[in-house]
Length: 172
Image 1 (cartoon, one colour):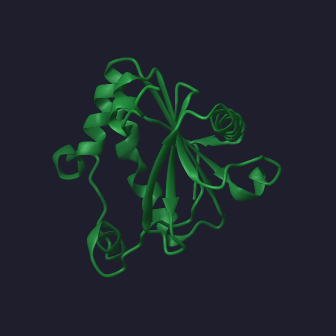
Image 2: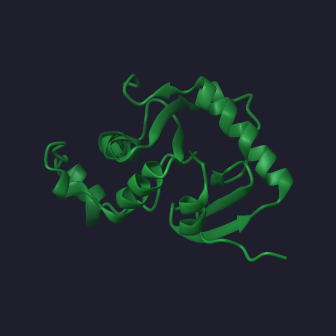
Image 3: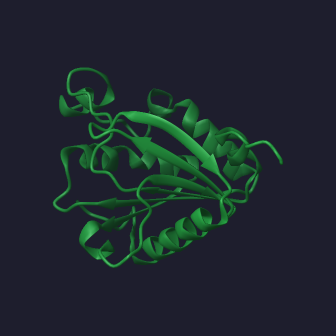
């Protein structure tokens, strides 16, 4: 049996990578860090790339440069949470790195069979599950090439993507 690839190996070796996010907040720290800075009024200047570029964006840029299509869809409650506003304001960085990003109002997802967890799906084969606690903190990852899981994720993402609004058109 082949060994399970790491997330970075999957990103580097895949032709497609799709990511579905379904939570209204993730590990929010109101006291310190980027979210707290945003709450205090800090916004990234799109023209000051050095101030907001980070290792994740390097990984995306490298993968896209090698031909990987990376798409991210976010299912969000409306009106959006404060944390979703924070994500929205910073999404231009994902787009600048080469990701395609879309947003779907949760009420438009009611009839979609969705997995119980956020995920990445690579080449419609490998699923990288993201597990979270109720407070949004990470409980770790799980990577599988279970065909039923991959099929569920591919179908869910495809439906979400077809209904979702491209980032440039989505207004909060």
